[in-house]
Amino acid sequence: MARQHGPFFAALVVSTSALVLSGCSWIFVTPPPADAGRGERVECTTSPAAPVVDTLLAASNVAGALYIAGTVGNKATPTQNALVTTGLVWAIVYTTAAVHGYRATAACRELVDGD
Image 1 (cartoon, rainbow, N blue to C red):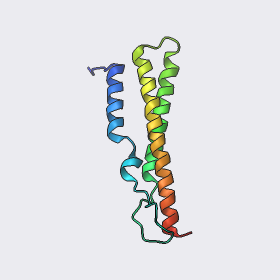
Image 2: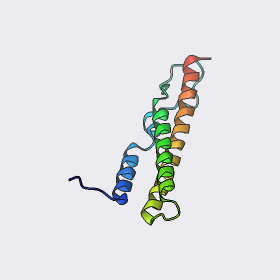
Image 3: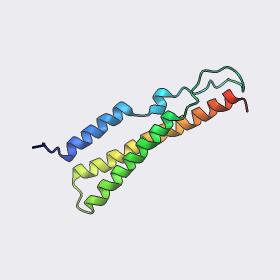
Image 4: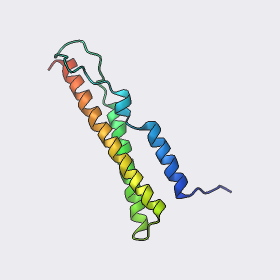
């Protein structure tokens, strides 16, 4: 018989995973140098892969928080409230990372393309 884990365990797993994966854009996106000119050879990230992952993680955290909030109604336990809050906080972290990543990769593509 499978052992069932409680909401606290789920919150622990989600939080640990979020810490490990937090902000792909902050980790993997290299913004262009501030003093670089268009058409110059620069070392920066043009791929939007990391910000896309951050966007998906933010959306999944919001969806999870909304799901939990919707299933418990007015009788939420402290653990359920913590899960909703944790999901929304991580959604903010991932959204901030995604915005950084989209801005940095767009600036890099503009410099590399020289348009």
